[in-house]
Image (cartoon, rainbow, N blue to C red; front, top):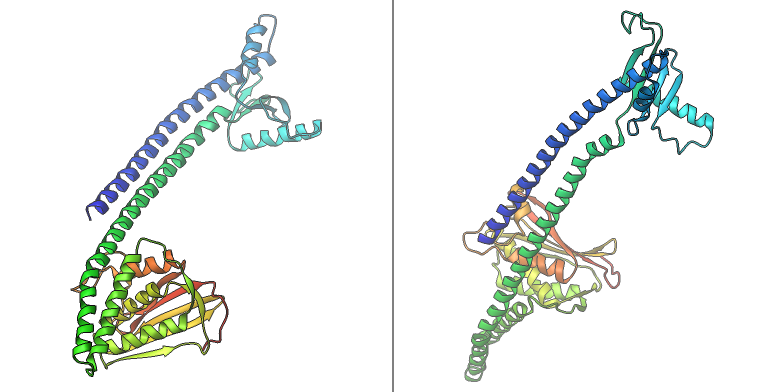
Length: 401
C-alpha cells in the first residue's frame, strides 16, 4: 500500500508539473506573440507611409530613405492593392509552387483577398488634399500577414506541451512498470516460500497415510485421505511454478475440465448443482494443465461462496471463431457495477475472510502464461455472474454443443 501511495503521489506531481509548465508556456507565448504582432503592425504602418510618400514623391523627397524603408521589410508578407483590387506590388510571398507567371499572379491576388478579408490591411490615401482616407477615391490597401517567425512562435507552446505530455506518459509508464516488476518479485518470493513450507508437512502426511494403509487396509476413508494429500502436493507444485514459465503441452481441455469438476463436485455441498456443457469430441489446446485447473477451481470456489453454498454452477466449453471458450456461470449474488473493474486487482475482496489474490493470480495464469483472456462477461446483482476465458489458436476444431 505504501508503494502504491508513493506511485500515486508521483503521478499527481508529474501531472501538476506538466499543467503548470503548459499554462506558463501558453501565457508567456501569448504575451510575446501579442507584442510581436503589435510591432509588426507598426512596421507595416511605416512601410505603408513609405509607399504613399513614394507615390507622391517630388524633387524634395528623399527617395533613398523611402526605398530603404520599403526594401527593409524582408520578413513580413505584404501585398499592395489599388482601389480596384488589382495587385500593385508584393514582397516576401512564397511562389515556389507556381509554375507560370499567370499562376503567380492568381496566387498573389488570392492571398491579397484573403488578407483583406481578415482585415490585416492598412489603407493609405494617395491624395494629400483629402480630409480622410474614407473620403478619398484614390487609395491603396497595404495587406499583410504574420511573419514566419510569428507563426512559428504561435505553434511553439503546443509543441512544447506535446513534448511535456510525452515525457509525463513515459515517466508514468516507467513507474507502473517498476511497480509491476516489484509486485512480480513479491508474487514469486511468496509463492516459492509457500511451496517450500508446504513440502515438509506434505511429505509427513504421505508417510502417515502409508502407515494407516498398512494398519487398516480395509478402511475406505484412507484412499480419500490419500487423494487430499496428493491434492495438497499438487497445490504446492503449482505455487513452485509461479515466477517461472511453465511449458504448455498439447492437452485435451475436456479431460482437464472433467477432472476439475469431478473434484469440486465431491468437495462441495449437495445443495450446489454443477452443470457441464462440454463438446462431444476432444478439444486440443496447449496449456499447463496443473495451473489451468487451479484457475477453474478458483472460479468455482468463488461461485460457491457467492451463492452461499446453494445454487447452480454451469461450466461451458466451446469453440467460437478459432478460439476455445471456457465459461463459469453461477446463480449467486452478482457483482456491483462499480466493482467490476476491480475484481482482478490484487487485494480486492468482498468477503470478510480472504486476501483477494485468487482472481488476480488467475488472470496472471491465463493472460501471461497462456496468452489468453479472462474477464467478467456478465453480472447482475441478485442473479449471478459469468466469467469467460478465451484461449487462442486451438490445435483442431471439435464439435460443440
